[in-house]
Length: 466
Length: 104
Image 1 (cartoon, helix red, strand yellow):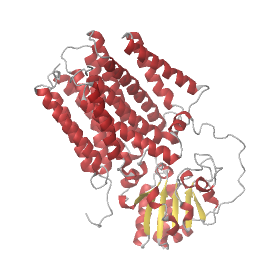
Image 2 (cartoon, chains in turn yellow, blue):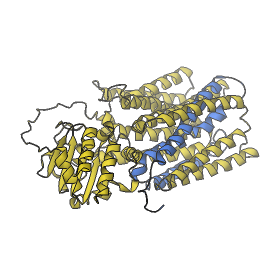
Image 3 (cartoon, chains in turn red, brown):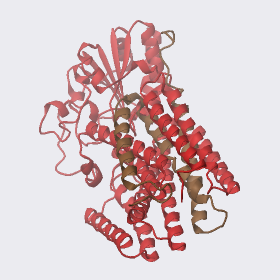
Image 4 (cartoon, chains in turn cyan, green):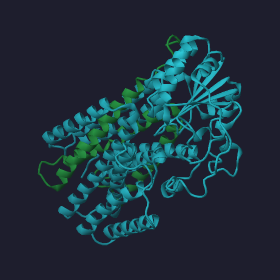
């Protein structure tokens, strides 16, 4: 096929323009002020790529394309408009899944086309078809499991059984063997079916042993896979636009995965194979003899209202309690009294990278009050009051000071260095890591027990009454 | 020479483009601040829906066979990814505002 001639040459130029728009779009995502324009440019790049493809000489089936796009567009638009911001991780998981699924199905149809027509192709085309099938289907079922865990459709605890990692390893070897057979020896349809089935099972197998708290890593990784699957489909189809876009997305997912594992002080291998949090009651439970000091809403309100500076430290508990709007109201009141307010956001504060920022933005918190770990950690020691809401392990000073602690080495917010700390918490129960938080027992810490939303609401009315 | 199926360009060129695109991706994406990581991910997700054009080519021929049916499934899935991804990213980004009254 001579596709670098005539109209098809022009299509390639349009694809090049699309790639440029994608890259510019991502570049503009580098600042909240330009991000919306960036997203628009990327969408424009996609639009022109789709229009250009319509004039491809091989594309004749316009009715079917119109119907397919209409169905997909309606489903996508309804999902995008109705989803709650707290459910964004599930949404991205589903989109990762359908993206990977689309790439895999394209690879399968290329296999069908080649084996139907008995077309002889180069070995690397076959190889990329197989890789597209493997990565795409792993992304599909892995994402569905991640979705089920995030949506509480199944247990968020790691699902483990004996020899799990060995079974995974054997499955992977079997898949490798099948790919070698299909590419190197014979294009056998039954071996191909087995490859499809095993890839689908492998996706489930890889995600079920991963606990709910590790989902930010899993989503980032699956995001990367969906890009790699698109690139593999691009190699199989000989389509440069797919190759470039797939590479960009693969890189994005990988960077985010890396940031998340660093924030948890874990290696990727440990997240994927470690089944962290599976056994929470290993070893004797240490009896806590220290006592924490509690405080009432009235006294806490006085501390806040007469402070010069306050840093809020939100964790996922805040999102669960849906207390973002109340926190914003409290912050407004304090700012009205001349208090300087900031928010300190740990990378793993939400259920996916940057999730907490979106939740606070939804509650109309201005983005210039949101600070990440590195930006704000030196500010705590000059801050009068730090308010921890629904966060636990990411504030544990043991991660910084006690080399024998299980969380040692994890980057934490230096909340304990503030003059006073108020911790809003339901009870004294330990966080996900299953260890006590030394912060709660410090002299400058006061515990405000109760549901986060109710506690913040009472703080609001107390501050109003001052 | 090994050539790719459709466009007839050598594999090595396609690999060059793939590898360089990964480097561009790393450069551009590491500059995105943590505040915008969720929109970055959903936006990147929408971009990975580029498989939509692959699906269009697969659906292309007018004769109905297995490949075309599968292509149709891929087309629907990829469109969900593209339309939903860009729309939800825009919905999130319009929530990001500066403090009112401090410049425009």
